[in-house]
Length: 139
Image (cartoon, rainbow, N blue to C red; front, side, top):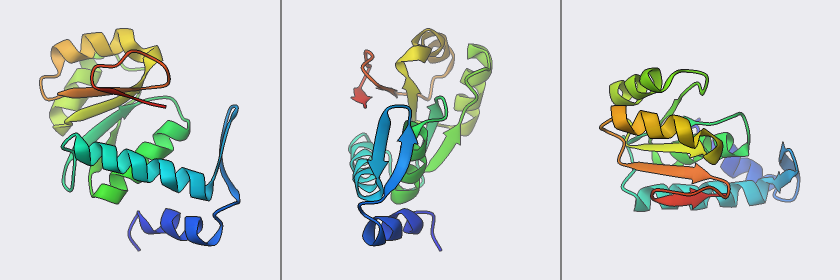
């Protein structure tokens, strides 16, 4: 079974059942699958596709799960990054993994500023929430 199949099946069979609870945010399987599909299409539009690499620097929430499933849907590799690391360590991971895009929270903007100076391969940063963005905003 491929990583993209379980969510697709759950959305088909349990579309109206609650799947994700993240603080005040609640999503059914159908809603969550729709969000994942929109993210996957957006990533494709930004040049991330099969064999691509995207990193995520985020707390454990629905955005992390969407990135996980979105990457699987397009055949890309997701590189989870521990937000407790220093900007220099994060930059090394991004550079070493050859990640092309970073998804992060607006809460980590000061860290990301330091990381962008040290990670030459990252051409796009997407912030979740209502933060400022270099290339776009995920909500």
